[in-house]
Length: 173
Image 1 (tube, helix red, strand yellow):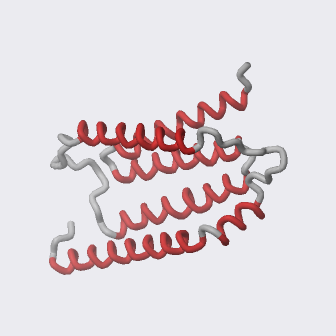
Image 2 (cartoon, one colour; image 1 turned 45 degrees about the vertical axis):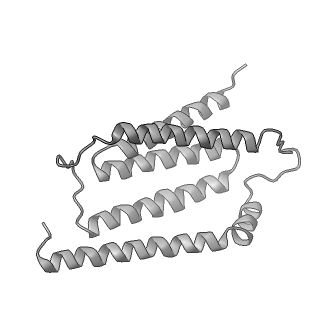
Image 3 (spheres, rainbow, N blue to C red; image 1 turned 180 degrees about the horizontal axis):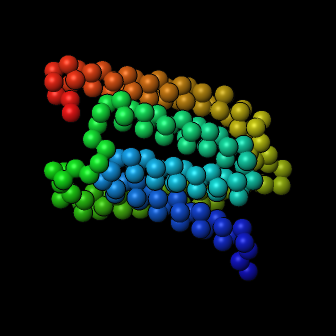
């Protein structure tokens, strides 16, 4: 028997996957960033359905509120063309799609093989509480998180420097 929770889970999953496909297939960068907001919002909805409210709000605040804004800010600062680019070719889209399907199949096979006999005890687990998430984040994942933040900052600074160099040489629009 299908419950409303299962139906919502499937619908949010379809929205997340569909908008993620639109992120990588749209030719307009601003539209791609907006589809990314939809995809990340659907993932936050899935977290809400899984009773991980803290993780859902972190998803909204950090990814939707900060990363996408940073992406749009970087696009606007670099004066990158945000509309359709007719000179760009899509002749490599078929090989790229084949590689994407093969990588997805390999990843799916690896995850299924790795977690085949694994069982999670949900009777005594504290899934999604701020204490559990904070403990995992600040004990296990603090170094990768900080490295990623420095990498994003370096990418933004590099984009600004490159756009200013181009503007000084007269190559800006």
